[in-house]
Length: 220
Image (tube, rainbow, N blue to C red; front, side, top):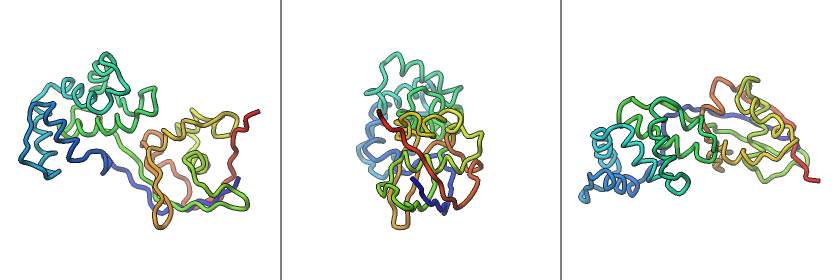
């Protein structure tokens, strides 16, 4: 299948705008024994939460936030281990389960900003682009299609190319694409992709426009 890609903008960010809402902050404040029912402004709640987090030992604070966000996916022992590992390693990039990277990024950056450091600073990449199916290419744009097209436009040292060569070439199924790309939104003038800077950094993009041919795995 062939597609035409046109990249409009590539941004590097250190937090996602929709990562936390008012209810998240209120629930976390309760868990930090810092509840305040009088405040409903998200910026004020965030400031209160940062104060509550900063009063705790970093690994203890990490365990509380991890338990809130990921207790459905991680057991108590895993949360305890991660709460210490997060202080020295970029867990949102290194954790084996790629499907947890986005939430680990959100947790890490909340803690990083609350402590003004102490935790490693991690980044995300946001790309605004157009993708046009050529000839008989599938018009339903999936994360796999986008990732395979983008891989044709990344430096050869890129981690996706190094780790997922067979999947990119259509030799194996590429289920990981759904987790490597955190979000794929349809916009008025194209699409917006969000992923980890670890998987796709601004400096790795080669061209603003390209035509690409991609292959898909065919089950026997």
